[in-house]
Image (tube, rainbow, N blue to C red; front, side):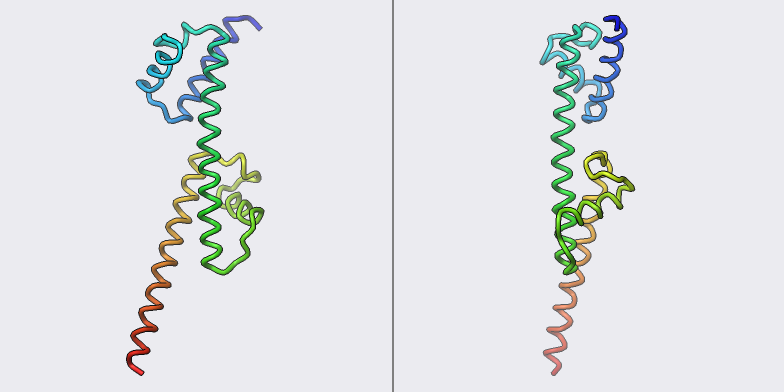
Length: 144
């Protein structure tokens, strides 16, 4: 493949990865300047473009893994509160069903965030209900 064509594809991939990593234009330019002393990706060599893409991919993968762990913890807490079976395969199956996806490791970060916050919300609601039940039992015991 010609160098210009390869560089164009790598630049496009770099821009896509920067967007997935949540970088705005200023963050992206700061990243380029701090790491490669350039302000635009067109000034990077092929090797530098590959290195930049690999670095951003690692950042994205680390973020995704963090959200996967959070999702598993939130769903596990919900299942414990409901006194249901709590194993990793079952938790992953619930997450996949919530994301309408067949593989837990392919769920996008944005969807993992949404699932996490939904189960955190459900846990809080269940916790509040449990608290109200305890209060009602206490009030009833005072009447007897």
